[in-house]
Image 1 (cartoon, rainbow, N blue to C red):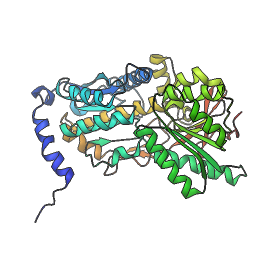
Image 2: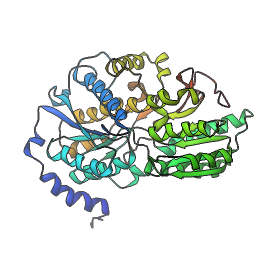
Image 3: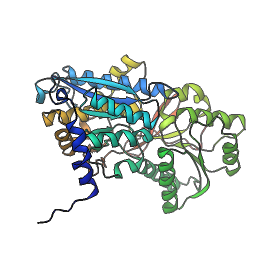
Image 4: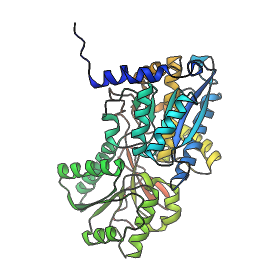
Length: 417
C-alpha cells in the first residue's frame, strides 16, 4: 500500500519533529502543568490583556481548587489524570505585533517549557503564534480569535471552541431576516472594517451574505487599523446613510469612529457590530452615551444566569478579581482554559501530541459550560461548529440578549434611540 504524503504530513513529520526533539527534557516531565498565554499587555490594547489575565486566573482557580460546579475539572483539586498536578499560567506580552507574537510563542515553548499555548485576541497575531506551535507540535487554543481563515490552513494543532466571523455574520443576517418579516425596513448596509485579517475576513463574510440574502451594500470601507483619523471614512458613511452600519473594529478604532461620527453630525440608524471594540468596557466608558441601542454579536450572555445560576457564580468570581462582569471575550477565555485543561487531564500527559489527540476527541455538552452553546466538539480542522452566537443590545447601560428568540429576554429596539 502506498501512503499518500501531503503538505500537512511533511510539515508535521519534518521540521516539527526536529523542533520537538530540541525541547528540554524538563518539558516532558513536570509536577505542574505549565500553560502559555500570549496577549497584548502593553500598548493600545493592554486593557484587553489585563482582563484576559483575570479571566484565566479565574479558570485556573476553578481547576486548582475544589468546587461543586458542573464544569470541567471543577470538582477536586488539580488534574486527576496527572496526580492532582496544578495548572500554572505563564503570560507573555505580544504587544499586538504578529512577529513579537511569534518570538514570544517560541520563548514560551523552548524556555518556559509550556505544554500548550492559548491566545491571542488579535487574529493577525494568532496566525504567527499558531504556526510556531505547529512547528513545535504544541497545541494552540484560539480562545477568542474570530477570523474564519485561521482554522482553514491545514494546521493539526489548532483548536477553536468559539464561533468565527462567518458564523457570527450569519446570525446577524438571520436577525435582519427576522426583523424584515416583522415589517422592519432593512435594505441597505454600510460595511466598515479595519485592514488586518480580522476586519478583512469579516468584511468578506458580510459581503457574501448580503448578496445571498438580498441586501444592498451602499458603502464598503476598509481603513488602516490604528489610524489617527477617520474623518474621510465617516463622511462616506454619512453620505451613504445606510439602514445599518456594520463595524468590525478593535477598541481604539471603535472609539475614534463614534467620536468622529458625533463631530461630523452623523448618527447611524442602527449599528450591528462584529464585537471586538464593541464588547470592551473601555469603549462604553468612553462613548457609551453615544451608542445607546447599538447591537453587537456575542458568544456569551450574562442573562443566561437566570436559567443557569452557575453563570452568575462564575461571573462573581471573575468580578472579584477584575471589578468587571464577564463579557464576550473574557467568558471565552475562561471556558477556553477549562477545555484545554480537560484535554490535558484526559491525555494524562504534557506531551503535545497526546494533548492534541485528546483535544480532537473533546465532547462537552453546553450545559457544562457558561456559554449558550450546544456543545464543544471539534471538526477535522479544529473548529467547534456548535457554538451558537447571540446578539446583544446596549440598553440602560447594560447588554440585553435580543436574538435568537430562544435566548432572547427582550425585543430589539429599532432604530437606535
